[in-house]
Image 1 (cartoon, rainbow, N blue to C red):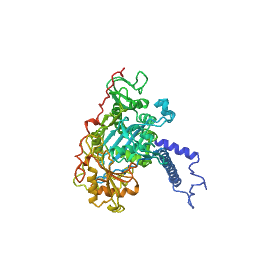
Image 2: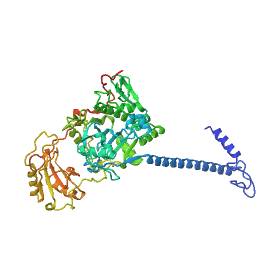
Image 3: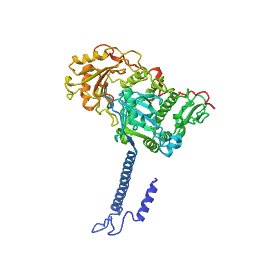
Length: 569
């Protein structure tokens, strides 16, 4: 604004009477001193200064009002966003491992289960999802990815489970009390969400992997579309022209030309749902396409997070919040913000996308379905449990002069460092060994049955317990099949006693589990303990994800999906 403009505005203000400047007795005027007039050249000086002070006071009031108004609007918007967050229970199963535990340096890893729901419970999801025969029916957890953020925040690992994976489902109890009993046979993993909600999907993962899951995030069809639109599109690549449509009308409808395309909206959803047209037309190819999309989206998010445009950032935040259902531990904006800042610490080059190693099921009626691959799936889960980077590059090492207390980054409100483990421990509440009733079962054949059970093994371990003062021990004629020795108990009152048994046998606290499949405390002697007075030490953990995990690095912007023959145009 030019000085002349200031003057003109001041003159107009005076003319309008906003700033009183003259007239005897007029508010804001100063009468001349008694006995004479003011000195020449000073006439009106004090009223002018008083007028300027009034202008400054007026401007200050306006600015204060604007600041207060902005703060109030921000607070109201903050409350609006908080009110928009949809939550559900974290874990509906009985095997609750507690939150991730800090390492020796006080740093805490973070495990988040990402769930993609195919719910068709409203007009928008129905329009996007199609399949009118499934409208308003129970949803399926068609996308399941476990995101592991390393304790030192140097790397991130993602493990996908194909939706066609067959698992034993754990018992899940809804907050209202409805119970879904443990399955008696294999169930397709994407049906887990129908057993009370995403908390049962978390329970199924916990049961299979023994990985403590700290949070979950679930998104539906419309959420994917909104997120892709908010970010402005995600680059993806196909090796040939592709059209996902079979002769009988099946397929996602995705149609893209050869090379790289930036997709958003419904096209992004089609990409994530495409099965017919990618690789061999199975769910495995779809998983690989989802990894390419997720890596690309992560790179785009990092770009957008640097935007100075508050409208753009606001649209991203609004889209994310409206798109998701989260567990109650992420029920505030500040918790989600803190979590996003933790995730942002990992450079794309240290993000590794993998698929759980699998084999085709050979069981009757399960053609085309898959099961976790013995050995290699557990290797991958173990690496996550032990916070080992899947890319083989290791973790960031604290400096030699650092102490554990100094090197640990402060836990964010969303990190579970302060959450106590719910796993039982041998404490003073345990009964004396002679009063603890224990049953021992021979499960040394393992789950795959590749080896015969060791004859008399239950009696041998029962004798070990008797020698340690547990006189109420019975070697059961009933057997089991366990790869790893485990102790199961039936009621909360038995938790401490079961932990005492584990301590006596040298088994880790994580081997103690609550279960409705036993009547008391039962020791299952697994394939890992076929001989000797204590379980065999586990082999060294792998240092890199197995080749069967199909690892994809987050920096790889050259990834391109192979196209299934017959789906080009």
